[in-house]
Length: 398
Image 1 (cartoon, rainbow, N blue to C red):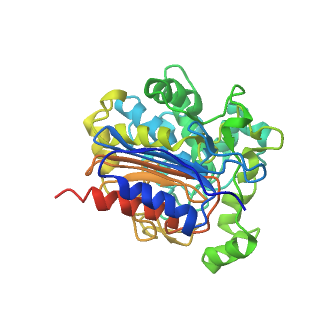
Image 2: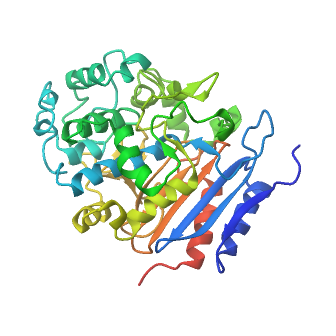
Image 3: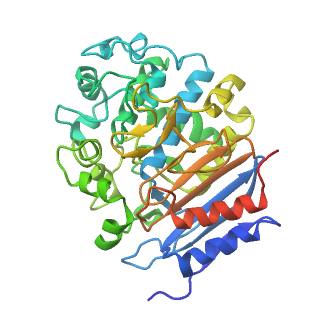
């Protein structure tokens, strides 16, 4: 057993309840190591970290410890397209093929950017083999994506594009960016560097292993009991939508590296973002306020805060996740399965428990990250405790 958990960081006066919840995560909710950061109206009011960075070694979580956040990466990826929209390079209502002509094959001719970013394009899996070498070659990957046939008529159903979405987003961004940068490169140049963020979509060689927290997997029993039984069974069915979207070709474990913890210089914009809670909260804080630091137009922020639009036949029922989930412009919106923030909030959770979001109504940028994977789709208990503490202090705007 480890000694009493050391909690570091600070909270502003009035936010002590968040620290209490963070401490209780370790004593009551099986936390191993993690961090939480909250900005309110542009001011950092919570910045906490503690516990164990590496379960095998017992090394402590440090102020600059970074961890992979799986699908919470999608929110940071969506920010790049929002910047492109603000610069007039991208119209969410335009057809994808207007920017990427080769995309107009095999029934994809009418897919709009909005439909793609709402997981309504039917492109949640690849039929052609896609491995790490293909992912690392943007031109080869673009050719594969251009040849892909939708699983059904685009816009009629929703299915979580667990890994594919980020690849499509990156190629779309390469087409509209005058410098033709990949999504990871664009994120570093136009969001991370200006804001001073410790977050990478494509981890560079320069980051030492000592700064990285390996993820500790949950036990098999917790995995079996934590998720809905239908989803668990589907995850083991090689022909199911979720298996094809998440487990294989290329599969979520592509981000791992035996020697370096996480793969270096490999961009998976839907799932291999690595960074701190502080970085995620800071980025969302800009989107939750006026966006001035990234020169975001009010119209872009208005669109991000607008309600999600359902698919024409399936509504918000997700054919991969088998539940009600709401997506808009690359972000997740609060819904029946996962509720967060206020009306108009947008963000994204990650497998295992991480979450980042912007709440423009309350002026909140929030993030929670962990080295101990949890097993729930409806909000990790550790994250939920922290969010409840935040909103007990900052009530909903009238």
